[in-house]
Image (cartoon, rainbow, N blue to C red; front, side, top):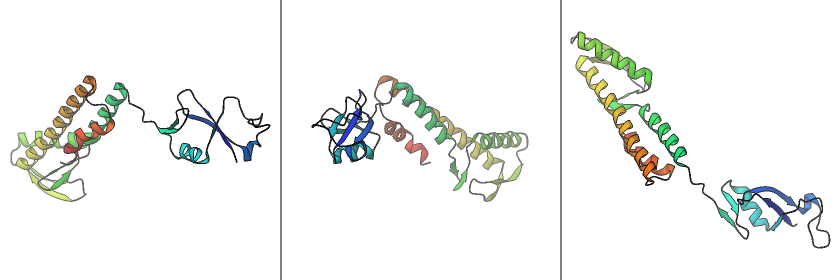
Length: 185
């Protein structure tokens, strides 16, 4: 079996034409039912091109092509990463607390209540579904920890955005790495 392939101008496969499907060569040339501009490739090259959407043809061999993300793509990814880390929760007093927008609103409301009544205490549900009795001091500590977590996420984002703009951060992995320490909290 002979395999022909049609490629876009940037080397991406645009069609494969195995002769066992499209018919044998005629006088040493591709069957006329196969489009013009095809290239003869080996079975191994065909399988490699089929194995991943990052494989391209450079005119002679199959290569891995890693698309370089644009500045806008990187900044968009960094924004999404910041939000994901910001809302992933934190641990305070050994207890996991949610840090999504609703949870932040609830803890800040509880903190305001505690400022009006320093003797206030209540049962608070942790992110793992367990209930914990917390007093005004504990609520203040939890609120401060969550606010600090959110602030650090924005600080990291600012540093990452500056790095993207300066050209020192060029990959999604570098963005992930910048947020990894904060994610581990």
